[in-house]
Length: 389
View (spheres, rainbow, N blue to C red):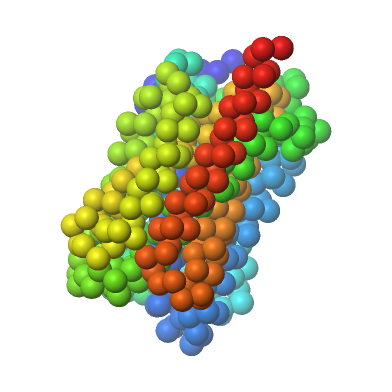
């Protein structure tokens, strides 16, 4: 039986874990120059540290979900966050590049499973009409990390060494363990939960279409964000002091999006997802046109950030269509977004390699958002046919 006492404390505990994960995921990008200098490696080699974490997310989410199908969600969240703390603590102690790559992979393993389970627990402690808002609160930890956690870890890395950025994340993870232990309810294990039942998510066309919307549609945001610093420097010609402010505006857009958009999604889930994809396509399509103006590009970056709320909406959508494979579907949502994080930058990188310039990242992003909308139309049509039967 799920306990509904102190839902805000439950959401705060879960969001703290999201804050820790968001900090380590995004701060590693800003800590790379310090890591490569300390370990005497080139930028290309250093970037494998990020790839190792992403690989951990992709592998860990489905594998952990299947193996832990019969474990109470509260206990599994505690185990996942303890593993996350261990991975980041070991990253801070890594004696060489090879061990750091291994420890970053270990750190990424709990990422997808944690967010999936946290979203399901958040939805379980509020009224059914507030599920998307509850999931948004958990994801708020991730978006706030881009505004607070990442600058804090970067400052530590610059002031006292990159290892302290990971010690910060370790401390946040241990704080999350304590808060979940104190506030999260025990959910028990539903009788139908099993490894075989969770694997059925991979055969559910509604689940697969929802994941495809995220993997393609969300890639547009990453195609621009990955090269945003270079665009602001070389195209907009902003000062080095102003660029972090624009990056913070992006995080602010994501944060506001995850606060406001879920209120619409709780009333009309799929139409809100479709509308947000169109919003993203327009904002990304405008990027090449405004890239030369500091004020206009800042406003556009804020609008692009709002599109980050798509993850929250699709997480709730998966709850509706996953049947008994709730844990697997929720975890796979974060695999889909890591695929988007690979697809968007890769396609934008191809455009750059062909000589189209940094403005072209917006064109690539717009096309990906429209691709996500096309998949959304297929999912919507399938949904209407199912209701008609």
